[in-house]
Length: 320
Image (cartoon, rainbow, N blue to C red; front, side, top):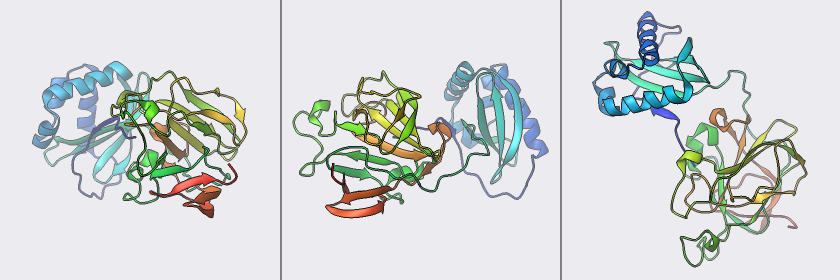
């Protein structure tokens, strides 16, 4: 499960400045004015050659028009810091606050631009969970992506999904039997998803139809979703849940082992599976992932304590 928000970032070399440079102040001010005037041709003319190749005029107009339509005009912009030689700004739109990274080449032309969700400076990172967890399902499940290296787990490359799991059910080396275009053919589809610990339900997304296997829904990234908050302010996200299967509501306190929903195929997923991740905040868009360990589980038939599953593991709760 991966999706960039607004991305175009070209190569940036290392720099040594520690405050906003005057050339950036001037060019960024012009960029904001052109954006608010909806003069996207003028923004395009601020690009250098490589940027124009990467983001042609038509794409530039679409990108900034969509941004203006969804967030409104810019009312305030503040320099935050440097990221290598690029300048990072806190941008206040009418409806939201975002971060904008800008890189200018030696001719003061825009050579890199990135607009992302604003991440507050006071967010505390979570290295791993301290709350004791069970696996959030019955039966034996297969860890398709899991671990702390990119070889084991592609999520590691994405800060907000770092160390997340994609877990499904495999039998005889396959995840389905019968017609691969039917969700019901997949062993994981419709299986119960349970609470791994006592927690509060702090977010529910529902109403997303399950995909036909092989088709994606990048506009509703996590599909039907539940986020739990532990007493230690750890946030556990469950994504791609089955349409109309969620049985909990926001604000509800639940006990370990309680039914949450069923495994589905909603959102940006190609087949039924559970996406499971630990976050340091409720909002996945600004989160940093943490390592999710389980207190006492069977791993490939052997008892493991305080264990972080990795790609290829077959995992199951003790006595469940």
